[in-house]
Image 1 (spheres, rainbow, N blue to C red):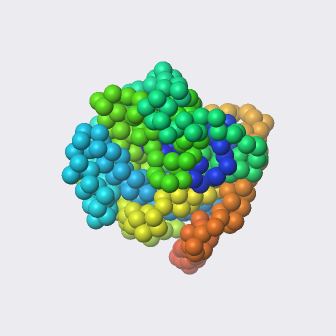
Image 2 (tube, one colour):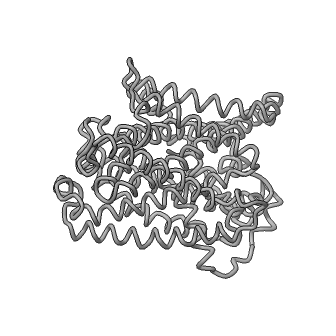
Image 3 (cartoon, rainbow, N blue to C red):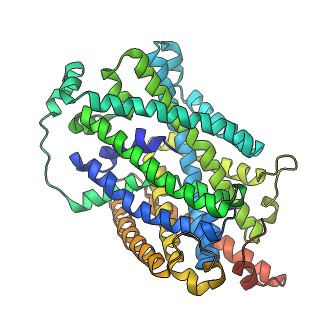
Length: 468
């Protein structure tokens, strides 16, 4: 998933974390460390438990059923909201393509609230339909988009290294005022706050784990895919961001981020011919669009896995009679994503949705690292099935390293959120996340109580993997 993570977040970070200054690249690199450790934890657990609803299955079988559900419930909510956020910010990219093509009327139409909301909602439900159609149809849609994304992203990388900041000043004279911007002091708290948000760039591999047994040879292919994704995509992100800041003065990026929504293609396009500018804007729009089907696949499998275990309404654990996909789980996730579109519009800022997602994913990744530590005692039978990083001592090293870093990131991110100057409490991600956790807890205890009354053995349910 190559959308907002490289085209928006590393540049809009100056609005969310004022004072990060020229340290974005270093914070971006540092943010990859806990994500890399979490990826190893995911890959190891996926090799033993290749089932739909990956992260929920891993924690509920290898750590604790309640923690597995509550963490994945907040993950589902956070990612579903961000699906809406991404759908909402796609429209300005489409607008900029129209501007580049000099289609003024079409560009102006993208500014109309009802049109923007309508397009965002239309994209969400289009990709719900694509997910319902199943794996082959999904593959034919997503894989070509992936090659377009990488190809047009390479244009940005090459352009960023071909030009320097003096070239940029020649075409954007107002950026000259920021060329000799004072670097300022290095503030560890600001640095960690930025790294915590940039951490969101590296969570896409989670979608791989959620597909579970739908992959071919999942015990082997899921772990490989997870590690390849974090390494290849992480390297691509870093090159992309270095190239952008090589060509555009960071002070100018920071100034623009404060006053308006900015994107990588929009920043670098003055250096390029009109045709290439339009191409990279189109590529960025495609990248954002391509985020949607993978995220919808991920969140719907979580819902299906809960329902299949009986801790969510059982009617959700039904597959489409023709396509054998979890259509009801997709519909429910689509409804929450649609709320994310409306929330982004009425809040007037998409960072609230990103902050909720970052908190949710940090907690989720933290529990995945804990699971890698505890599974040998909690469920030794499944622990013996781990085929990636078989050594228990290495598992613990990865687990404890991930736990330590993620606790630091989560603490800093929460303190930043609680100390933010906002108009109302519901514009803070932490209280919203806690409310979601409360709702999830109520659902869990209500459903598990009902299972016990019906004579179900909860220990037996959570000791083994669901049927494929």
